[in-house]
Length: 176
Image: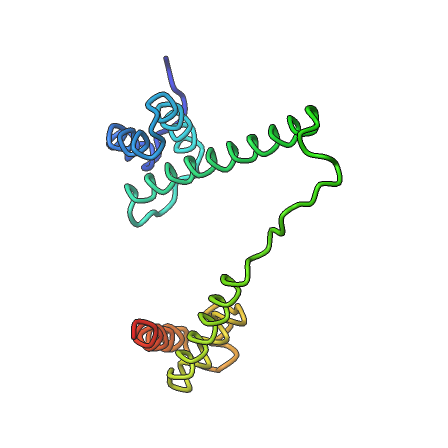
């Protein structure tokens, strides 16, 4: 078969690591045939992805493979849910007005969430003021590093340093 598409760096990485990726996928799926299908899908994706700078091509390739596995798992769950709903409706297994379980979190999970939030707030309080202000703007308010730098009139490098300090304090506080 003649292939007119130019090889990208990712395609070369795929060819070099195909066997390793296949083993990875067999371990993830537990099914050699499905793993082979995913490898073929991965080949198509590597051919269609525009080439660009990738820091670690092998890791990028394995992440692509893992994402394809996750896509299949999600699709399988959606299909099973849809088929069960149809089957229940057709067989009358579940009356139309049947009580549906509350999909929300139970009381124990809600309590654990509140305790975790309190621990996190307490940990954030231990962060020095400058780093805490940068952390809040970036992680809580959702601003990019550039936006935080502009708002606080500091350099992006300073934002990154403040974030590193904040993360160090938070890690230490949450580990205790």
